[in-house]
Amino acid sequence: MTKILFVCHGNICRSPAAEFVMKELVRRAGLADEFVIESAATSTEEIGNGVYPPMRRVLHEHRIACGGKTARQIRRSDYEDFDLLIGMDEENLWNMRRKFHGDPDGKLRNLLDYAGRTGEAIADPWYTRDFEQTWRDVLEGCEALLAALTGTVFVDFTACAEIGELYEELRGKLRWEDWYGENLDALYDVLTGLPHRGSRFVLRMPLDDAPAEVKLYARRIRRVFADAGVLAENN
Figure 1 (cartoon, rainbow, N blue to C red):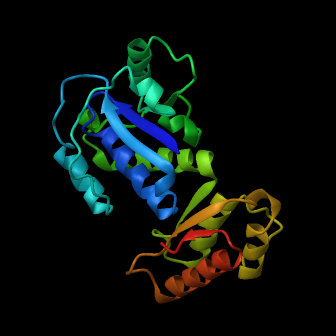
Figure 2: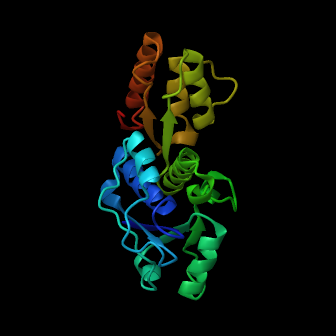
Figure 3: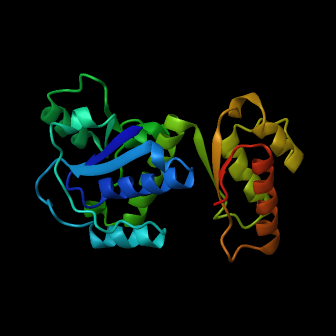
């Protein structure tokens, strides 16, 4: 069981977004029983308040519910209770180090570090008013975190309008070498090759308004993932 606490300043925008995005990702990967995921604030400013309405609306638009969540402040006992305490920016980490008298067990992390964006902050919509950017940052960080912890990879076809774009997404996620052609036999070879032994994949399929041939080909791709034994969920 891996226990994760996401932390931001007020616990009404960024950290609850990360909490519920991560809960949805582990559910889609079939790993919900292997995680405990919560969020908290470094400050007392919003204690007892729910998720900020504009953030809640963006999560709802992406089919992620966050009902019942109210802000709480981090406790000293959280350091012992959680395996990872993940801040949204460097200020969050500084405040956690002060609260926990350092980080003796190396549990404190910045979320976007997992996505290769070392030291970068999750966009704070309290100031930017760009809640969609916050969503994108949180999703990128949480997907990278889950990949680091479990080897789960998310392949996203939702923006694809051509078959070539399906392969662009596959190349970006699968470490697809140039000598592989863009066909289903090559895909099977990639998925059963050494780099992906033990990996799990979640596929986000094209949207309803995508061209029919793209949706059909995406279903064929999903079948290859299933045949290769690496599909975590038919999402």
